[in-house]
Length: 394
Image 1 (tube, one colour):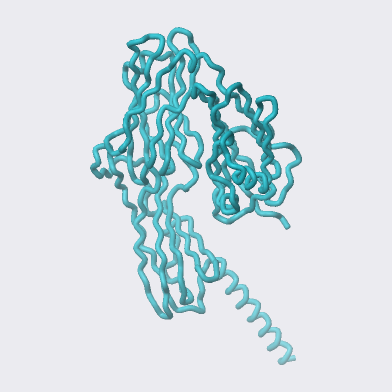
Image 2 (cartoon, rainbow, N blue to C red; image 1 turned 60 degrees about the horizontal axis):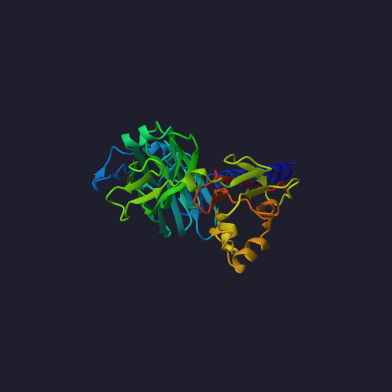
């Protein structure tokens, strides 16, 4: 009887130990190790202003240290630990020797628009047995800021106006006429699109007014827009950048052909532009998920894609479908995209592409955007298909 009780107690002890280790693993505490890793997180509020000076008052909202989240990854095993606030991290967590990636962030690298700054810092640390390592992490603004300024002459000339900002691989961010905040966007190439309503005819026109070639993270930019209407029938819209951008002013003549021509029409089927859809990995679409472009004399149809998974397999991140090479088209078609052009209508069917997307913990959503213009460079309203992959239930 005593032996049976001892065996029972031993089994219970083993179960409790297993549960304790399991709970510790969930919290990423590797108690069989003896190394300590102590993140020291701070926030750098600075951004480079229009005049090139460094300012601590440009970014809003500004995160506190407690708003920063923390992620630690064992680069050998792939195991991760996550804390929604760095203040929740237990400084006595012990780790096995090895190489670790330590990351802290506020916001996310996908969202663009107003009041959504993205701060980020990371470090790779090599831990030896018994080490006690402080890891300094100074989170800095990892996106750029863009503010639009419309001249009084411009404001009074057009019946209505607004801008759209588009970073390569990102979404389309509306910048209304009455907006005075800076928009937060991905760094890199940023296009400035303008929507205008003409003063007399009331005709609407949308076009790409300029492009910023290399917007830098942590920089605040101002884009100024003016109009010259000496020739009333064909006003000239001029976009200029602040002195930090080494790009000449860009002028567009609003010719009668440009204004009166029919803009390409992009239609969506199976989704709504700008509204993310959730998709379980491996699932086959029960209905078509399609973009179609109609319009005479198309000059460009630019498809941009944000997907590490697809691009690693040969998909082109940005391509004019009307000038794509055979290799580019073949790569996209091999990954499920069906492309047809019949009677002037260009159709992109993403149904089979969706089944090839895979869930990845902490991964970005997949984003497809399509922009089309006619031979006079008049744009139709761009559309976007954002797909959030979900893990399979199997």
